[in-house]
Image (cartoon, rainbow, N blue to C red; front, side, top):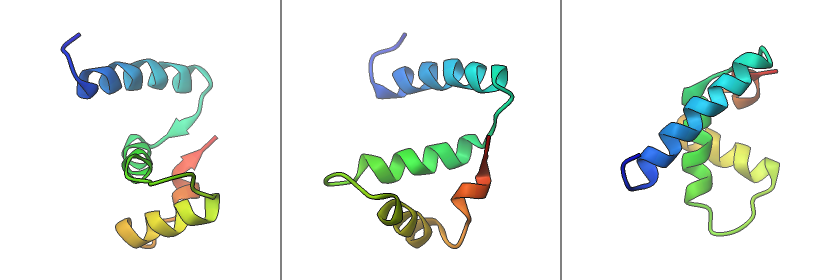
Length: 70
């Protein structure tokens, strides 16, 4: 594995996607990337409402909850 967070998270995503497929969960990778991007810049704990408000402010009126179907 190459040094850095990029290689670490790419490996993590590959393994995580295998788990999601095993659970037959339909997870949108792009949405997961966006949520992680918002969380990476958080200055402290976020409530669910705060996270959803930030997500909508940055990415528009996308319904994040419908993008992740379990």
